[in-house]
Image 1 (cartoon, rainbow, N blue to C red):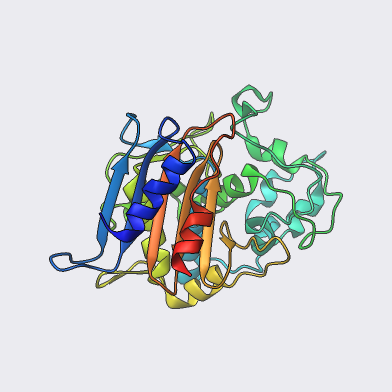
Image 2: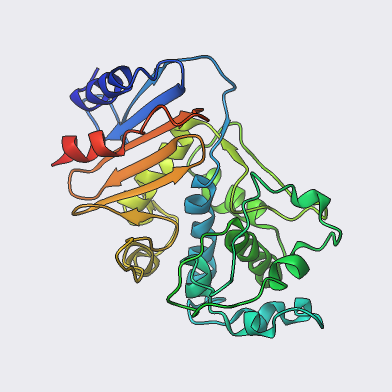
Length: 301
């Protein structure tokens, strides 16, 4: 066991989290006999091979925006109304049409409230077109400034993908990211009309979640294959932030550390300086455990 994995496993035990954490995976630069990276995994409790990553789905979905950017189909300053104007039906807030992609990805649309698809059963909404319901939320804040977290933001990103590519977001990412990275069992929740939920509901293995951190750490390069451009990497890793340090679906910690989290204690961290990644799946509805971000940050200092 490497020093990194030993430290992460000891932190799980310190938290008395053996009954909550499913698995922890670490990735580091290759050791003798490795090729792309050195991976270690520790399992603490049995579970399905692929777990719900909850809001870490956003930090995967954001890569779809990068693929569109690289194809010249989308910029961060494009406005939603340019592509989704047909869904701004009478009675909805027309200001949604002026919201930019940048504001959408940073949860700064100005919407009065967000939507949590893990707590709100949107399948029971009267209107099966989720965009109608999302765009009906009044914009009462200042777009670009006021932070209101919402799964709906990354659902809307998925709908942009469909308009611009003719395929749903899950299909795009399966072809352009998941298959090249060697993902195994995975699935993404969909709405009543078959659109990828985007903001949550992505079931993946812990090692595949860690692979996304390795891809981000390597600025879009996977071995000898480029998944997305360095230009997008600069945009993704240096998105405008404020005191909460939340950019495009990841939070920047101390130095070169980036973190993403999900409901019930999911986590993904990657450190650009030390070239290390840790990912974990957890199920802690009572909030007994605190995740591994602090321990990872301390180890990487």
